[in-house]
Image (tube, rainbow, N blue to C red; front, side):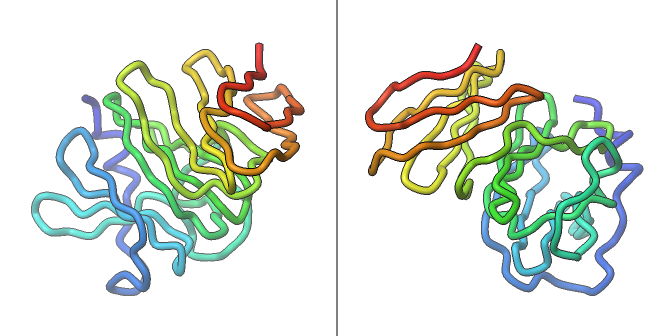
Length: 178
């Protein structure tokens, strides 16, 4: 798994230590990924004990898609999961979206307009599961959005890539998408 391009873009945190580590994931190389919503940043603890910044400037906001993840802004990042290819997915709860940090260090939005994405899980087939308010939403590798399970029925306007989908999620397996 190529990690050198992303590793080259790491910077050390501007202040030592974490404030409120919330979610953890293990990267394919064994490093520990840490989301700190209080700092609006994502960190990596390497095998040699270094704590390195992966993403986020430390300022709450939304910026940076298409650019280096270390120059991006998050607003209350909460969930994190790592794919086998090294891609890191982050639930950017305050910005109502899930973002992906590629191995080369660039960040982009995967899905937007989610009411409150907080938790993430990744299936072996590449399906991304998102805990989102009163629902669990899935995003297939091809971009199909489905509600896996839901509590209360609600209408969501969801964006995957450049496509917008409106969907009412009243029951399990209500599907929207291409």
